[in-house]
Amino acid sequence: MKTKVIGESLENIPWQDKPKDYDGPVWRYNENPIIERDEQLNSNSIFNSAVVPYEGKFAGVFRCDSKSVSMDIFAGFSEDGINWDIDDDAVEFKGADKEILKREYRYDPRVTKIEDKYYITWCNGYHGPTIGVAYTSDFKEFHQLENAFLPFNRNGVLFPRKINGKYAMLSRPSDNGHTPFGDIFYSDSPDMEYWGHHRHVMGTYEGDKSAWQSTKIGPGPVPIETEEGWLLIYHGVINTCNGFVYRMGIAILDLDEPWKVKYRSKNYILAPKKLYECVGDVPNVVFPCASLVDADTGRIAIYYGCADTVTGLAFTTVDELIDYAKKNPLAE
Ligand code: BMA
Image 1 (cartoon, rainbow, N blue to C red):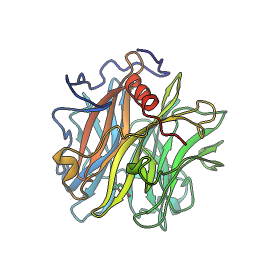
Image 2 (image 1 turned 45 degrees about the vertical axis):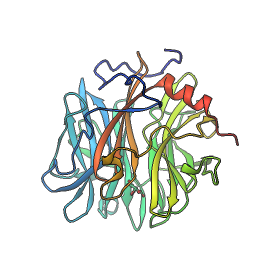
Image 3 (image 1 turned 90 degrees about the vertical axis):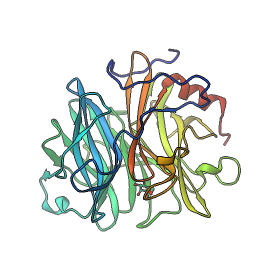
Image 4 (image 1 turned 180 degrees about the vertical axis):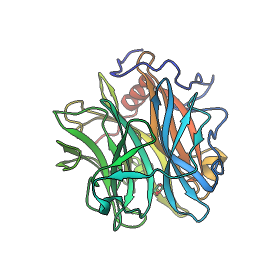
């Protein structure tokens, strides 16, 4: 391992070696998808979901759209990170203010362990999409806090530790529909309630410079801390004659000032190519929401939604991603 990861070891991370002759920095689990669309009592689809190591095993929060096509988030548990047991009832939040507990819709959760709590951020309907925030210690009782931002915003992703003494979050301001624009911003907060110090991190690229990310981009899993900087796996979108296509990219952000981009890859790291990524309720989408990392080996397991229908697992390493970003730089 060339680059040191700042984090915990995770000996039981799900893992498969890179297949021989495979050309690319990220490779898929050979039994994908790991979660089918109808694994839950009333689910139409299970995708864009987040997992973390929990008590020697794994826990997570899952986006399950119902057969009436409502969107909500559900807790789940797993022995191995691959086979999941997802609750049939949606997460029920407790909280100080009833106004904030009103449910319109919830989707695309991320889970971030900060100190001794697991924080959940998700796209929360409150007169339009914004970023909901909650925490849990056991994935049974969830406490909802204030929404982080005014509508409209999507893809709120917390950093796993305070930066310069403040909680830190990436997000993607949006509109109330299928947003035809979108850059990634950084915000911080002294208390997980009031967010400010907003900084632009990075935006889209038009033309043939890096066309797969020409319409909008958004942060994916919780950034991974390494001695080279924060590794940010993100999604990038192009608008085509058949609609949006979602791919995955990699950027490396400065450790102390994460709104500064050190490296960013011109090429995508994973694109919809397999049938389950190209065919589903929304074709041609790979949408990463979580990763597991083993600090000892630098192994990374990425969890991603496939075609807004099922959940996939893919693998890479810290060195693969950093090398790839450096070898295929996106010149400003
Ligand atoms: C985005 C979100 C994601 C979804 C993607 C592709 O706006 O709704 O949940 O995966 O579109 O449909």
